[in-house]
Amino acid sequence: MNFQHISSSKTKCRNIWKQTVIHFFYNELCNDTEQQIYLYSHLAQYYLEIGADQSGYEMILTARHLKNFYKIQDPVIRSQALHTYGRFLIYESDFEDAIKTELQMEKDAEIIKETDPKQETHPLRRALAFKAYIKLMQGKTEDAYRLASEVYEKYFNKDEELSHITVYDFLLPVFLVKTKWALINKDYKQALEFNREYGKAARKVNFITKKATLSKEVMFALPSDMVHEKEQLFTELAFDADSIAQTFLKNYTSLTGKKLDGIIEKLRQTNEDRKLKLRILNSLFIIISSFEILLLLILSIYSETQIDGLTKLKNRRALNIRLEKFAASERKYSAIMIDIDNLKN
Image 1 (cartoon, rainbow, N blue to C red):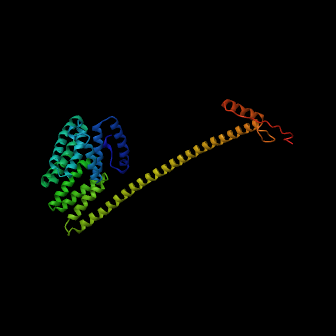
Image 2: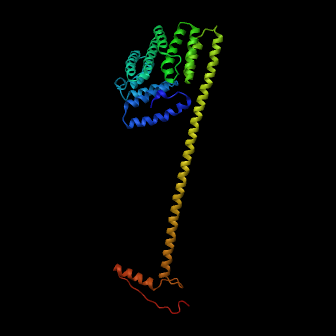
Image 3: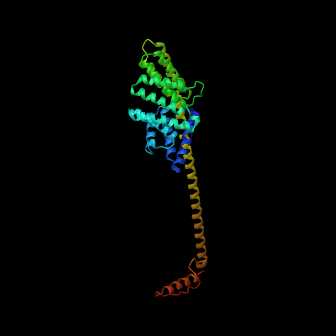
């Protein structure tokens, strides 16, 4: 599955899990560890994109247990896994290892460029944007800003169509570095401009949570005399919060609907099970009823052959059967015969 062609739109994101489950099953069946890592790393990135960082870190660490990322043979998969893993290393303040992941990403970018001309630019600009982000987190703000500006000028075409990969891998880290650089240098007008560019790119692919997070940071950093700008950011945040809430409610409603469908299906299955039980009970009832009828029929035949119809006493045939049983048992027995005259009168 090529995640690079999956848009982050709400409609397509709802299908990502179904596709992923299918591919996980296929890759596990084929024992394709690298493809499994590729899926894990993209899922981890998806979590990071929507702000669920902890879940993203857990996902990439799960992939890390499958294989050492540096030993992955496919440069595309290796670069993707290291990029996501590098974010975790930064979170852990392990900048030394984070820099190692970025250096390997640069090497992989050259390999990918030779093997796939369609990816001539993106792997390298992703690596360099990540490098600028590492420098920012290290506190090397000036170096980070200089590199981010150079990478943006050299590798971004303003006419290119923005995909969520371009936004997340390249534009967001670049404008995040620029915005924070401006805030540190108290160039608030420049910070507002960079934040607008960040927000424009984020909104393009529905990364509203990330847009709101940076806007909130800028709003609180602005001095008290920039009342109008603060109000504008507050209004944007209110709008973003409403959008996030609506998305949450929509997703929650969707999940509730699916849960309800599951309950209905369970009830339907329960009803089917109940119908099956009723059919089994009916069958048992028919069997028991048939046995009772057969038993009554046997008793009726017995009565007709061994019992006198008038006196209801056992007849000569019944006596003969009893005598045969005594004879077969070799037991001693005695018999008395009495003749009663006019018994039936």
